[in-house]
Length: 132
Image 1 (cartoon, rainbow, N blue to C red):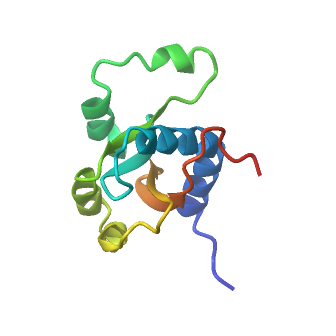
Image 2: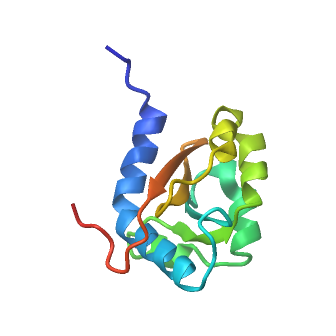
């Protein structure tokens, strides 16, 4: 039996909590005519210090305390050019090989960053998000 990796488990849970929004984001990118190998949907735990440079790059000057003050977890969600995967692969070499693979037809790549690492998922672009 495989020992549970709590960091991966954390990112899996973080992914599931954000999945509906991430599928909607992927849908909007595809609707704009962006090819599924040309962008990556991201979800970043803003409070993970490991990803602070990327959070600051993607959302400079954002007031994250407005979310914390409401008891919410601040998260960066969006899509970015797939070139960003080279940076992510340098920060987390264990997943770099995932970015060399073609994205399966009809799906989009999603990277969840949190708990000091990153995990890669393939998601279905969906205007409503899957609720299952």
